Length: 255
Image 1 (cartoon, helix red, strand yellow):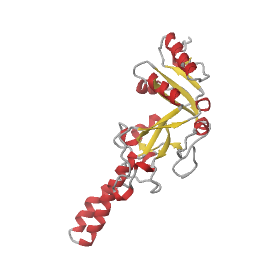
Image 2: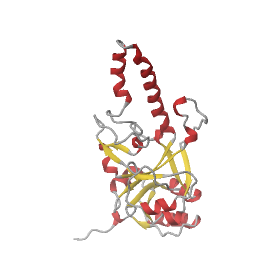
Image 3: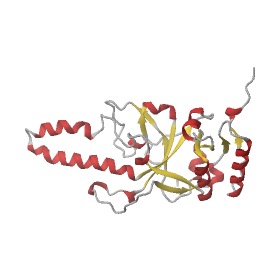
Image 4: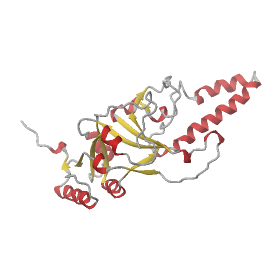
């Protein structure tokens, strides 16, 4: 279920159009399970997922703390606490589960190339309001726009634990990303450093109302007509009442 918490972290425009680009296997899994996949944040390719800008990173301050401890032994306990907090920040990435969407009024040629390189896939067009209304899972789901920041010397507006997962480096600004996030407490042991549950999966599926979520289905640019027919048969098989459309990037140019 969608929850409204932490307004300084999760900011969004309910009327904004959002897109999800995926290959056919992921689309069929979405329809068959009637659920969105939320991926563990530590499984993403970007090594900076869940990390902190240098102005908020404990690791950035740790070398000076160690140097100061040479003349002030009382700082050694603080250093141990700092190291424990660093491990805590790394571990929490396994408990933060993410579904990523692209904010745009139009299709993105770049997103097609990045997420459907096989030329056998689709995009779902939705809105933020459709997404939040469609979430039917028991888990609390936070939704907001990713903030793009300069990680050199910068900090976060607050110490809210979700900031590292709702922030990315400016190099990724072209993604215009919206995120839905689940914090699965059963995966996180906190400062104790012991794990109550060991999970080797890549994430979880969260139940959604497909008719609410899916506004349009479009097939990849350049796809033959039989791919659109196949996607239509998949929609019919799982009861999604949508007529897949060809990508608008295939529109004929005018002169």
